Image (cartoon, rainbow over all chains, first blue to last red; front, side, top):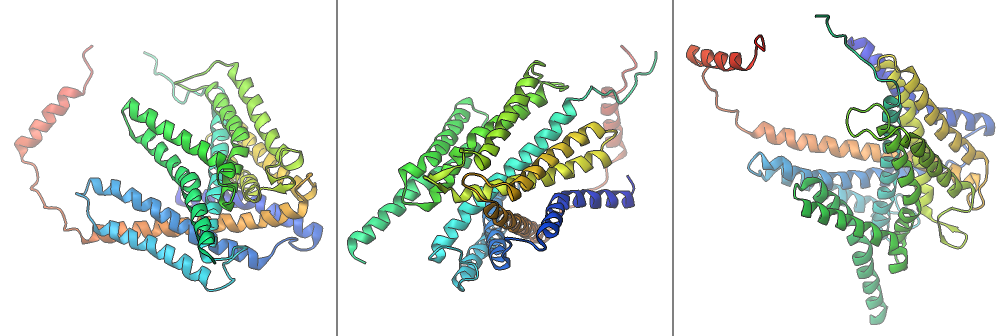
Length: 158
Length: 273
């Protein structure tokens, strides 16, 4: 596949990915002359909390992954310390921004409660994401296997 | 705040730690032991740990009623049935088709389709019928509003992407692409229904509000995840950069090359039966 064709393919796939969301938005805007039920502040709070929490949780997961990376390298400390600092930065940033005031505080009374809520919320969202990925990939696989078997090459006559 | 109140709070926190957060941590730990062990006994232990963790998380709304986080355990208990039905159905459909290994009988395909249909109908019943996960009578579990729109939206988006991918990258995969467009359309239709048809406990306004929030959630998870992967790559890159370059070795001698050529020649060929 040539470079330009590959770029077109990627663009088409990206467009296909956002197409259902764009269609929903178009229908909503057409029917109710605006995005009904959309609260910009609340959406930003949710976006910021999700970003900080997923960064922190995934950094911790990748920190654990570094132990396996270190197995083949005589367990160097430098990358572990580096990743630990990056994870710590995520935790510190989360508490700093939550403590700033109502910007990232949702319906919770304290920074600690908000942080715990963020973790549970991200776990539930990640569960939904994982389930959606399983259903989509599984359906794709079952669609492929349910078709007639293909023979992609022919044996040379002897 | 008197000492009894402090003790009560400590007890509640300890209860939440032991009966919710510890089991939450035990589930991936058990899965990790199961996947990484070659020993059968360890595999069984990992499976047992994960199972006990899931059961304890699911029962946490009753064992730690004071902790609001346990609503996630309640949700897990509510969705585990339809989720398993759908995944089992997809497994049966996939492996009753043309697969080179582990092929199931052809009759399992119908059973798989039935199970998947029941799973989806069960999920739909959670929105538009009496099966909605409720923390208390008439009070919908808040995390259901997080899970359901996120799942529907992402399934629709991913299936649409997979349909286009099979058309553009795949070789003559029009039928498969149509199946994926149908799945994407099903997710899309359910979102549209959620935006226009009230359920007994979930109104269209509730669903609409949480749909936009799930878009913010997904964008946030993608941004945070991408950022952490970039930081991880940067840490590895910086460390690898500081390593001394490997010692250079001399090019192989003619005799060594001949020896290698002989070894290769003794392993390939196939002219003689």
